[in-house]
Amino acid sequence: MPAMSVIDEVLAANEIYSRTHELRRLTPRPERKLAVLTCMDTRLSIRTLGLKTGDAHIIRNAGGIVTDDALRSFLVSHYLLGTEEFMVINHTDCGLMSTSEEDLRGRIQNRTGTAAVAPASFHTFQNIEENVRHQLQKLRAHPWIPESVAVRGFVYDVTSGRLREIKDA
Ligand code: ZN
Image (cartoon, rainbow, N blue to C red; front, side, top):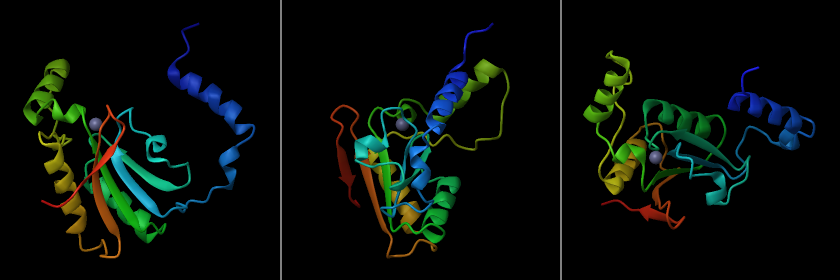
């Protein structure tokens, strides 16, 4: 028999979880009316934010970028599920900072031997503060995100475990 894959291990763990299903009481509406967009990085977790499951919407992608899809999630979060504060978090030592669009695309093309039109951009960046400000602008400039929604941006330092707020330039 082949070795158990991680997905098989997850299925076994879920079987055990489902016997008690402690999160059954949760509703789809975030209890603390917060939506957080952050990188998929392994070192970021709701634990680092003092949040519990059910407190907030956690929207994640590589980089913590306000893509069309992240924007879609924020809008659903506010209009359908009642969140009132949006938080955008980028982090130090992000994989997207150590590469460029051309380099990443080139590396994948070399590995696969083929080009691809999608994704149109990997959203690589050089300056983390500028990158956070750029994400905030995309949210604040959007006509469907009301003034009443707080939109704030942060850099998470993976060494110190601290969040630092990025104010407008
Ligand atoms: Zn990252």
